[in-house]
Length: 273
Ligand SMILES: NC(=O)c1ccc[n+]([C@@H]2O[C@H](COP(=O)([O-])OP(=O)(O)OC[C@H]3O[C@@H](n4cnc5c(N)ncnc54)[C@H](OP(=O)(O)O)[C@@H]3O)[C@@H](O)[C@H]2O)c1
Image 1: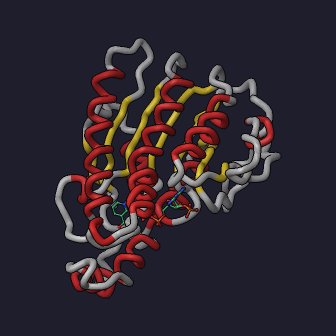
Image 2 (image 1 turned 120 degrees about the vertical axis):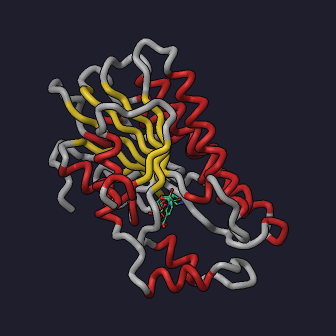
């Protein structure tokens, strides 16, 4: 996988298991300074490419997902706010902060499921979507902010957003609502952080259209649930989807910009993807 080697002793935990100590998950706290990245949804798609790209750039990476495929993964189901709060909270709380010279926190996990009008969906499916895309995202980011607020280093907190945060799509109302909510959460957080002695720099990043399972799910949906399906099928046929590794490199370039602006929205298409 090409991840930077560091003491990784742990196996991903299951949601029902006791929360792991960071020594088990990431290895013992290290005395040397390190660049550290925490992201959700690093098991596939853009998140997987981000894990690999960040490791190549010298970051040590902790990721949260259901499949949790990496040695540095913590298994979590973000559709359950109880689990996400308990598991992510305990994993983050056990991290050392003294030896961090740079921190990136990326809210990347996301889901379009269930596609179609919310009025036709089960309440449990509606809650699972909103928990994954919105409520758990905020719970995890809040744990990261709490734990590292006093850490005096460059700290960037990024939300992988979407064009769906700015525009409505028929059939994606839950996703659109959550993405728009996250964008404004980031803008408000940016105002709060500017009052802190050691602030995070919160930003939104639009990753464009990426060749991932999320796009495959769109193409497999029903026109009755998602009227724009043909446009998305054509995009794939025309080779208009960008490969995750190219998008991940652009996201990293954005997050490493020396003059990153609090609360700003960045597009990967302006940064080489
Ligand atoms: N693909 C696009 O064209 C596109 C466009 C605009 C924005 N985006 C955004 O970019 C981000 C990455 O999208 P992608 O295309 O890479 O999606 P993807 O291939 O479907 O991957 C989604 C990631 O989110 C994780 N995830 C989903 N539900 C989860 C849950 N309940 N609990 C924990 N983790 C969960 C998945 O991990 P597990 O399955 O292992 O849990 C996976 O790692 C998302 O925020 C998406 O909204 C994508």
